[in-house]
Length: 302
Ligand SMILES: CC(=O)N[C@@H]([C@@H](O)[C@H](O)[C@H](O)CO)[C@@H](O)CC(=O)C(=O)O
Image 1 (cartoon, rainbow, N blue to C red):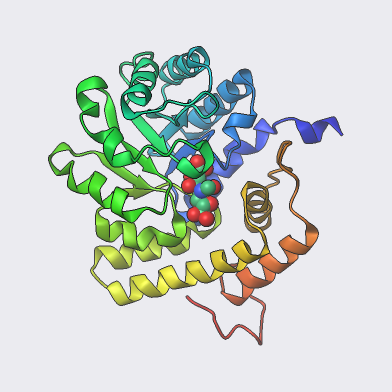
Image 2: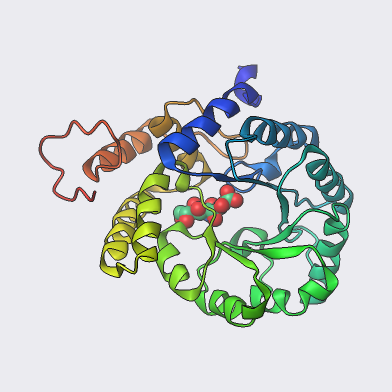
């Protein structure tokens, strides 16, 4: 029905409380990949951003809005809007249909967007597997601050740890934020110097991931590794079943109890079979709090 095609803005406030209280997540990245930001209309993106900023006030530390779009004008409109509503930062992916063919062209595009919100910290969102723009992040960062004065850092959603490590190594003096976006490899990125993480699994494994971050902080690397392996067991399991944004949405509904609704076309709702299997795995790993499994939880990882 029609309701299935519209955004349910009314659950966002509830979801803020859930993330803060149940998952220990205090920073939100809005309208990115998981939020299907690129499948929303501009007016929907504005309303979603407004809702997160308003409902997150005094509860969340930071709300960063992804404002990337194929149209520079739309991107600028969203950037300006993010500034108006009091967001804490904006992020932009590379335009992915008519693509920038080199680093300088990409930076020129990013610069024009950043200039529409001259007071907001700006993040480049590097996600080459989805944009098809394979320009290495390390190259994009080289000299970027001279071109984009509000440049604050990078959201790095790629498995190339050479590129990521070089981003950190070559910018040591600059206090950039290096936000890593491959949840199953976060520990390796922390070793390389990641200063934060943005990812889909923190919606439901936030608490678990925070335990890993705490272990890393106190230099208890063997326990940090145990946590990472636990997270990997789950991700590896769902990857084999077929894992993407639709499946993430189903797991988010399952774990939070807050209805996320189906994804929007071209995505298709996750199958019942997927959700059942994912639930069984979450239980066996002790990732669901109401753990009623008496046998078969040999791999419980708390
Ligand atoms: C391609 C993709 O969706 N990557 C996710 C990861 O969190 C990913 O789901 C996770 O590492 C499991 O592979 C994030 O990088 C995306 C993200 O943070 C976003 O919603 O913008």
